[in-house]
Length: 327
Image 1 (cartoon, rainbow, N blue to C red):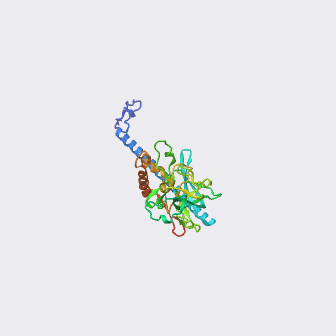
Image 2 (image 1 turned 135 degrees about the horizontal axis):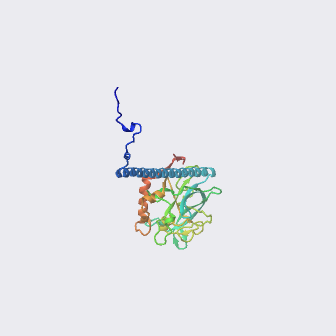
Image 3 (image 1 turned 90 degrees about the horizontal axis):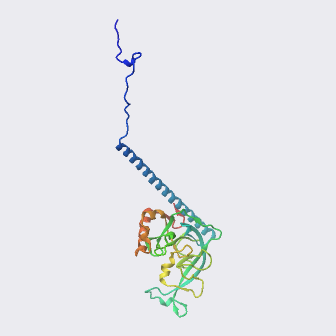
C-alpha cells in the first residue's frame, strides 16, 4: 500500500491555516487621476459651448421667424386697406432690458418743411418764399400713424434688425437701432442708432418712398398728437403754414437718430433686412468703443456692426415684384 501525503497542511483535518498577508489592490496613480479630471473638464466645456451655440441658433431662428411673420402681416394689411403700410421696428424698454417692437403703421398725412437751398446748389430760382423775407426750398414729409386695432408684435429679447444705408446713399454701411440701456450715463453715452422700417404699397410690393406725394422723409406719429418729437427740441408740426424752418444738418442727421424711447425720428426704409443677435455682438466686440468719450465712437460702431452683420446675420430679401418674403 502506498501512502499519499498531502503537501498542503491546511487541507489536513485539524491543521491550522497559515496567516495570509493583505490582498494587493490596484489603484490610480496621480497622473492618471489628473488625466481623467482633464478629460471630464474638457467634455464639460464642450457640452456648455455646444449648448450655448444651439441656444443662440434657436434664439436667432425664432427671431427671424417672428420678423418674417410681421412682414407678411404688414403686406396683407397694405393690400386689405388699399394704402401704404409700414412695419416699423421700434426699440422699447422693459425695466432695464430692451427689445424691439414691430409696429404696423399707415399713411396719415403729408406735410412740408422748409430748408435753405442745398449747399452749392444753383437752383435758388425754384425755391419759393416759405417765411417772410427768406427764400427756402419746401421738402415733402409723410406722416404715418399706428393702424387702428392692430397690436404690435414683440421680438425675442436681444434680437434686432439692420438695414443697409440705402436712403443715405451709403449702401456699404449698416444702420441698427439704438441701445437705450447704454445711453443713460451722464458723461459718456453710446452713439444712437436709427429706426428701421419696411414699406409696402397698396399692391403688396416693397417700396422705398411714396411716389404719390413725392416725399423725402417719413416719420411715425406714435402718440397721434400731430407733432414729431425728436432731437430734444421743440416738437415739429409739418402741417402748419408757413411750414417749419429747418436746417440741413439735423434734416440729414439728428432727426434720424433716436436718443429716447419716446422720440419719433425719421425712419430708414429698408430694401432688405438683416436679423441678428445683439447680445452676441456685445460679447464679441467692445461697446465702450461706441461711446461718446471715444473720438471715433460713431465710426467704431459702424465698423464693428458692419463686420459682424456681413459675416453672421441672417438676411431677409423680398420678391422684387410681389413683395413676398423670399424663404
